[in-house]
Image 1 (cartoon, helix red, strand yellow):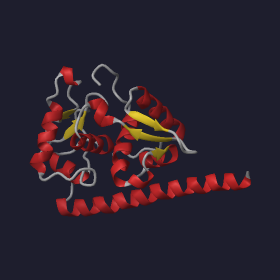
Image 2 (cartoon, rainbow, N blue to C red):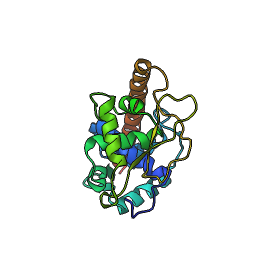
Image 3 (cartoon, rainbow, N blue to C red):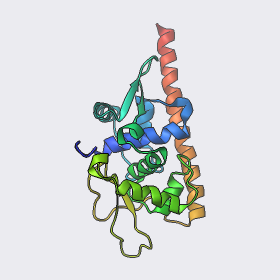
Image 4 (tube, one colour):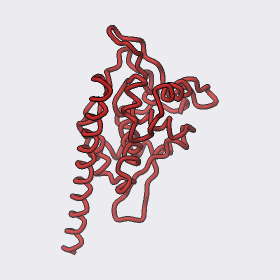
Length: 219
């Protein structure tokens, strides 16, 4: 990735959503464009919240396809998309989960990342998360360069946050991600928000299937 221009915020969001939904809603993965746009625009577990059109999401998908980070699936009436992040970036599933959380929610501490990635990969403890972060940060140019960086400690923060570098150098002061409350409360809130997001995604998919059936019946 070091030889390529940085991903735009929307391209990073699209890639993060595909990684997330592969694990959380496998029944409808790969995602249709409609479901992918819904995942990009969901209000929970996203920082910042955006409102991208399907045309904008499609343009981001096209660029990610050009870089082989997204694969198009055929064989159904609706085109579907899957990610290829692990193979292209040459990182294990644990690192893919961490990168997805950082792309979707901005800078986070290792403890926050452990909560945010719980449904993508269950890390044994915070030190496990830190080990993968350090590995991602220490990649040399032959490996494509670092994929994460530790942010400067902000006033009042006990722990330093990490940011992904797929979208270029992070801002000097990154916004906080999930987990600013106590870990137990944050974990419960995370699960509730994730379930709500998945219900919204499934509704979008169901609405799309109904439209297809209506078109089929009318034909």
